[in-house]
Length: 74
Image (cartoon, rainbow, N blue to C red; front, side, top):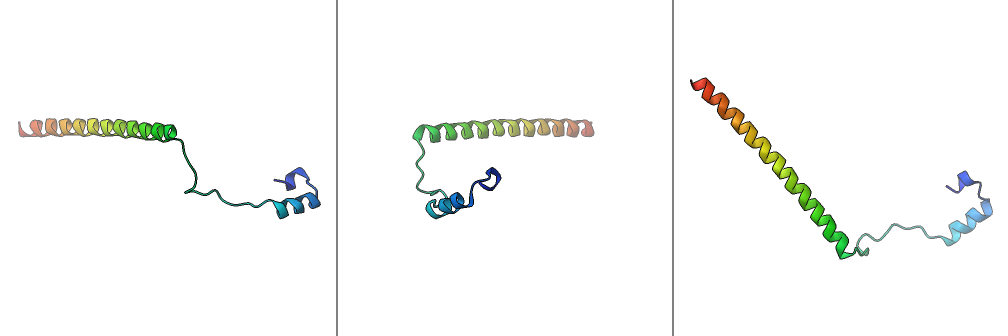
């Protein structure tokens, strides 16, 4: 990024000397409870909607199968 902005080599060298780049601490990050609650609530709603869709699909398939079975017996 600094290369594309024509930053002087001396400034670039000083930055590399003083700035320590490191990854965030994954286990030390604290998340507010309301954010976690909202996330869990939304995921629960999505799972419920997905279950309803799959249950409806199974019911439609069962009806189609039983209709086909009845017509083949007659």
